[in-house]
Image (tube, rainbow, N blue to C red):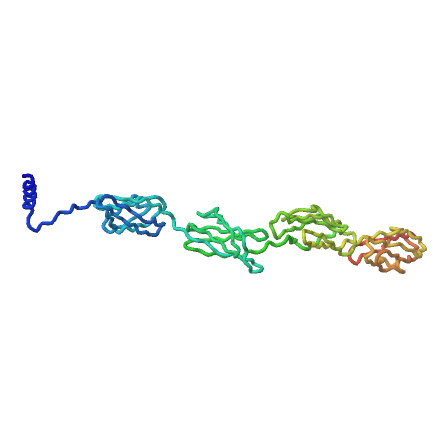
Length: 380
């Protein structure tokens, strides 16, 4: 009995199927969608991929079938093929939806960056310069620095686009700055000039001063900003007195010139010295005015006349002079001209009147300058 029931049950079940029917397979459903890919930089694109996972455990690329959406199109946009375009810097969620199941990825859009590189060489030898400090001092990249390698090369990675100032500096070299606009990978080479040794230029290097003397000055300017480059001033010229005797660039050197008591042009120098060198400023003073002292200063002669003399002493032995009489009754015997100290001899004719005393002059005239009269009075 038991066996027959089992067979009947199987037979009934078998008879219930139509001839030719096959078993039904359940439809698999989407359980999740994964979005993968890299974020683009500003202005560039990146391809994202949408992968669906089914209830059966199978995975399928559904990038082209999914619906794509950006949470902030001001940062990034996405098209129907899953291509993302970076618009501005920031974070954005990109969602792919397939069969009502959504998956998303958080992307960080960064600015496009470039490489700034180059080499540094010596302006004198042309050789490469290692260990040179390279620094970006302005723009969006301000503050970053690096040094040249053993081959004199440097490189900045991830440099933001735009204008910047790049400098190269090292001890014993003049710092050089360059304005650079980065719009792609950029190369900027530097040629550094060696820092010159301490030296000064005098302005003017020579000047003329009047015979009367006075106060004057000139400037001393160095070729370097090195604070250790200082100057000192001195003179061995007795008629020149220097004011400030030491200083730094730019310096004003004052001096006083005494009056010139001679009838000759004279010159002197002021020496400005610094570590490793010196320069002279030449001071030329015009000739002084000749003056004359007569001894005696005048003479009163008798009516009978006679021969007389006086000495001429000029203010300087180089002063040349001549002697002339302004009346006919005085004649010069000797000393009509001379240089330096001299004697003038003269003869005075007799005088009988008829009126009072008569007056004449012997005039001493300097050939360059100066005039002095010697009065002669004669009574009848």
